[in-house]
Structures are given as C-alpha cells and as structure tokens.
Length: 87
Image (cartoon, rainbow, N blue to C red; front, side):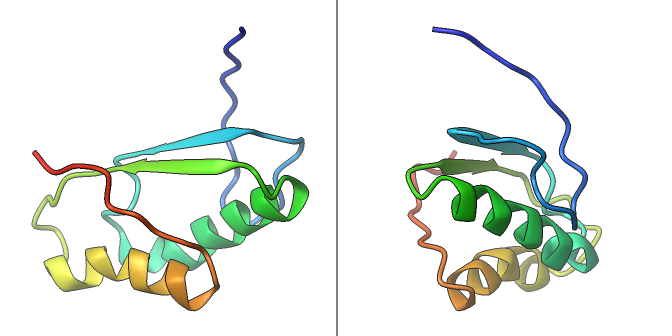
C-alpha cells in the first residue's frame, strides 16, 4: 500500500482521484461547511467508491447544532452519513 498526503482547497474540485479523504477537526466553522461539501462532492463524483472519514470535536466556538449541521447538509446533498463511534 501507499500513503499520499495532499491538502484540498475547499470549494474547488479535487485535483485528482482519491479513495479516502480524512477530514480532521475541520467542521468547527459552520460557514465553511458548504465549501468543504463542494470539494467532497467532487471527490465522490470522480470515484463513487471513495469514502470520507470526518473526525471532529465540539470546541464551543459555534453552537453545537450548527457544527453538527454539517452532517444534515451532507445528507441533503445525497451524501450518505454513518456514525462510526463516539468518544
């Protein structure tokens, strides 16, 4: 196997095909959700078998409901969301 690390510019299409996108602690700013979802949608358009893993913590910088709204917005775009685990 191999590991590639690449930053993605949210709001623009992914520059190449990805199988997995790790979104780490990146949904704490609700005003950035749409741009992040745009980029993730481009990943899934290129590779329907791709997966995004979203790991996050609630920081208190925005109402929890607004942060968690990321998942509602993803579902509204037709992106499947499954809760993996909770710490």
